[in-house]
Length: 351
Image (cartoon, rainbow, N blue to C red; front, side, top):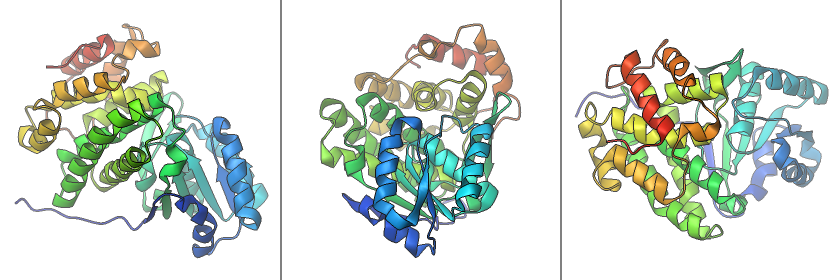
């Protein structure tokens, strides 16, 4: 066994059906009294209902979160934080809302309570991805990690099939990259494999029955595991490319991860053969082809061109992706990345 360092996440995880009712107690346990509820415009009604449940613990709702956490949106939200004298934020929703809460916490050190309603997993990471000037950058800092995460499967029962699939694949990408991360450890590997297994078993069920409570709980469990992996170890090529496409071409976040995952896994399959062996076995023996087959079987998007990306964009995307590259088990060069992007744009099954 190689040398390793393991640091566990200090976040408090509350998991179970109906546990979102505990949100007021979680706010109070943090020593807070003035929570600002965050959401996207689409989830404003749910956020207002949550604010009502918080009662005197709530100072209102900011429902302006959007994909890729633009800095200008964060600045608008910070004005609301100041005006309401909020002493914590409660983020209800998916990665967009979680990202906004993290961006506020990074700048103010306010405590966060997150109630995820998708499977992206970013709620258990000390990582913030934000967009400014057409570029998406990431920062890692202890202040970014939410203090409390409440996983309530009941809140995911209405999650549409498409979003269930893409946010699940987004989380799975964290686990796959965690398996060959430079700073991986035995605990992160165990969590990554069980997270992948949880999604492999639950997503096909959810496609057929969106209100299967056991499958919803299993998927949310997978989200916690995969997200924790993302927060524990460093990411590689897959996340660099997805940040490039999302930040510079405004492709949809979860959908971009879903399309890219089989191709980036295939790219690293030989260089990280031993690290990916157990995961490949979960998906039929071929990590790239197996993930592509799995994604296709559950109706996931398979092609970048479906997001409005034109072939001419791929040259610029390749140029950006090789700037300041993340560590990766296989060396990165512009030609190979351009070829990878071409395959993902066309939507062909990777070898």
